[in-house]
Image: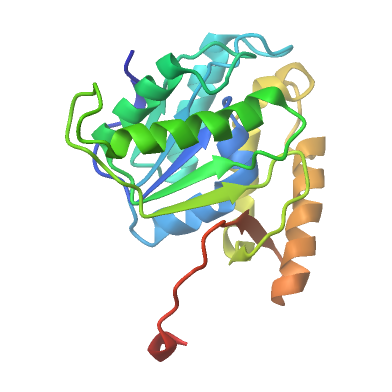
Amino acid sequence: MTAQTTFGTPRPLDWLCLAPHPDDAEIGAGGTLLRLARAGRAVGVLELSRGERGTQGTPGERAAECVAAARILGLAWRGQLGLPDGELADTPQGAHALAGVLREVRPRVLALPHPRDRHPDHFGTSHLARRALHLAALRRADLEGEPHRVSRVLLYQGNGDIAANVLVDVEAVLPEWEAAIRAHASQFAGGHVSETVTPEVVERRRARLMYWGTLARVRYAEAFEVEEPLLLDPEGL
């Protein structure tokens, strides 16, 4: 199993964000992805499932929405791994498929859903990614391509609280962030939310951005958690 490219062209990426379903990357890390793309970084998103078991939207509709959102985010690449929705977990088959993608697009930084989440697919994606990261770096793994080791892993916030230790100012890209989420129109009231109505998910996430922004002394900030200490150059402070 290999990833299907839904937008752009596979290439070495500066950042890759893993999303259990279409729209998870926009909701959890969209502001940061926008800022990175505007700064000239090669940014990608990989959906692990098509969200085919979701209550709203068909796989075809959701795939088209992913392309629309990718254009708004300025992504270099977007892909679909095609694992079964509702069954994302740490399995050898899924880990090998994901490890193969990691070797192909060779991200420097990987953003994952935080494992502390009520949705099984979210914490399943996080644990699956851990095995895939290990496999992608093994020279003798049964995989095509050269081994690849990601330099940094960040965990983005889903449905639970996190111990954030990295905050990113996203005020300047807030309208585009909201537009990227709105691109997934099938997920909001059957796809009939008007431009004057703000989807509840946007309202709730914006409240979180304001909270994290307060801690960083900015208006809006996206939050991540890293498990390894960050090394800073004192000359750059």
